[in-house]
Length: 430
Length: 162
Image (tube, rainbow over all chains, first blue to last red; front, side, top):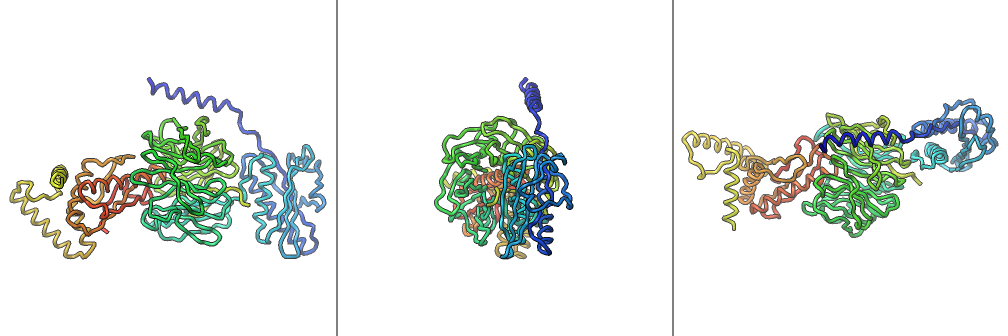
C-alpha cells in the first residue's frame, strides 16, 4: 500500500514545481566595441584590444541564462565622450534594455586603463561603472570583470566570469591513469598543472579568493590532505601526524578548513586553521561523517553521515552543536555543497538509477534532481549560485566536467584538454 | 586463551575451501597424499625460484588461500568465507612475526568519492581488527584505504606482505 502511494506523492511534487512561474525572459544587452581616447597607431592598437575585449564580454554574457547579448558589430563606433554620455535612443532602437560602453587607454608606464560602464536604456541612467589599470596582457581579466559588472547590475548576483576552476586532469585508464590537479580560468584559458604526474590525487578545493589549494594526495600510501600555496608553490600536510584525512573544504573567509579524519573505523568531521594549529573535532557519531561544507556566513556546516544506516545530509553549527538531519527521501544523499548565496545545498543522489546531482534548501524543502546520471557526482557551485559544475563518468570509467543551470536544462560539457574529475569553482577573484 | 583462539582458527579453516591445507585434521587417502606431495613440490619449486619478499608473498598467498577478501555492497561486515581466509592469514602471520603486512581497503565504484574512501578504511579496519583478534600483533599490521581510486578490485581488502 505504501509503495503504491509513493508515485502519487511524487506526481504531486512534480505538479507543484510545474505550477511555479518559469524563469523571466533574458535581458537583451548591447555591447558595442569598446572605444579609445588614443589617436594614431596607438589608438588603433587600443581599439584592437577593445574589440577583443568586447567579443570576450559578449561570449561571457552569452553563457548565462539571464542575459542575451546582441552580436557586436565592429563598425558600431562611438567616440570617447560618448562612453559616459551614450545616445540612449540609438541603442534603445536595437531592442536592447541595457548597454555596456567602455574604453581602453594606453598609459605612459606601458600599462592600460580599461573603463566599463553599464546603462539602463529604458530609464536612461547609469547602473554601474568600474575602471581597471592592468598589464597589457591582462585584458582578458578586465573583460571578465566588465562582464561581471553588467551581469550583477542586471541580476543582482555576482558574476562568475573572473573565477578559477580546479579539477583532477586524467590521462589513461585503470591503474595506469595519470592524475594531476589542474587550474584554469572559468572560460578555459590559463590552463596549468599544479601537481606532478606521480601518484593519486583527488578533491582539489580552492581557497575562496584563490591563492591556496587544499587537496588529497595518496603519495604517503594513505589519503592525506595537503595545502598548496599557489603563489610560492610551497606545500605542507594539513596535519603534522600520520592520519587518514580527506574531504577538505575552506570556510568562506578562508581562515579554516573542515575535513574528515579516520579514527579507528570511525570517520568524523574536524576543523583546523588553514595556516595550521590543532584540529578540533566536530562530530562524534559512529559511522562515516564526511564531506563538510560551510554556509556562506561561516556559521553552519552541512555534511553527510551514514549514522542512520544510509548516507543522508545533516546541518550543524560550525562548532559541532545542533546537528539535525535535512534529507529524508529514498536513496542515499552525499557530497553536499552550500551555494554561495546560501539558498541551496547541492548534493549527489545515489539510487537504483545511479548517481545524479540535485539541490534542496537548508531546511530540507524544495528538493529537486537536476541531472539524469547515471555517473554524476561532485557538485561545485558557480559564484553566481545559478549554475553547478559536476563530474560525469561514462560506462568505461572516463569522465568529463559538465555544467547544469538550476532550471534543470540539459547539462553542457566543458571543454578541457583531458578527462576531468572532482571540479571545484572559486569565488570571484580580488 | 591462546588455545581457544587457535581452536577458533581451526574451525575457520575447516569451514573454508579445500585449498586450505591442514595436516592432521583430515583423514588422507593415498590419492590425497599424492596430490599433497605434488602441491608441496610445486610450492617448493616456486619458492626456490623466488627470493626475499617475493618468496614470502608467494608462500603467504599459497598458505592463506586468498590475499583478497570481498565485502557485500556498502557493507563493512566480514563474511564467513572472508573470516576463513583471514584466519589462515593470521596463522601465517603468527609464524612470521617479523614480516610486516599492510591491509588495503577499497570502496564501491558506485559510491561517491569520499564515502568510498571512508568505507575502504572501515573495511581495512575490520580486517585488521580480525587479524588482531586472531593473535597478530597490532604493530605487524598497517593499513590504508584506496576508496574507489584504483578500479578493478571492487569491494576488497588485500593483505600484502611488505
